[in-house]
Length: 230
Image (cartoon, rainbow, N blue to C red; front, top):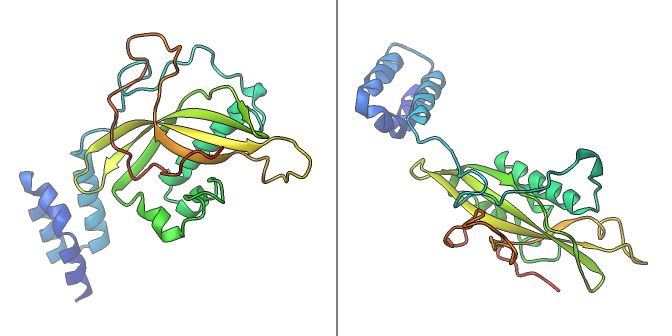
């Protein structure tokens, strides 16, 4: 009975494989007493091999990140620097890639609309994707406002849509904030937090025909909707 139930769960994968008869082989294997989990893994691997590869646009091309003219020197990165903010962004999308949504949400400003959202609603933002990845661009210089510093980091988010396995990509920018070293501020206040994630806006002095810009797309489930706080 249990093997029969697992065989039924294989049906969507078998339909993907139906074009070349591999479903017949999988059903034969099950009928002959093969391990259902192993058969499912084999069929899934073969189905994934037929999907379009994830090849997001290269830097400097439409849909790609802007080209950074000054590579970051590893030894110059400190936690409170713009490069430190970029590392927070890299960590955030790394956690999303691993589906560690609770840990990812902890990188948002805790008092904001996204940081204070319940775990289930936050995780639901990403259920439309079977894979989530990101390439992180160079951060902006820090800008000060009302005792805080802000840094903007461009991000190329890409992945695979769960419903059909199609590749997907979009440019976004992440705004991070930290409280400056002022009396009364805590270590948590002085840590970079994500304030908002929205559509990528090229710098006003950007040169080149595109420099990574592309037509705007609707905000996706991988984006936070919180407005920047001043």
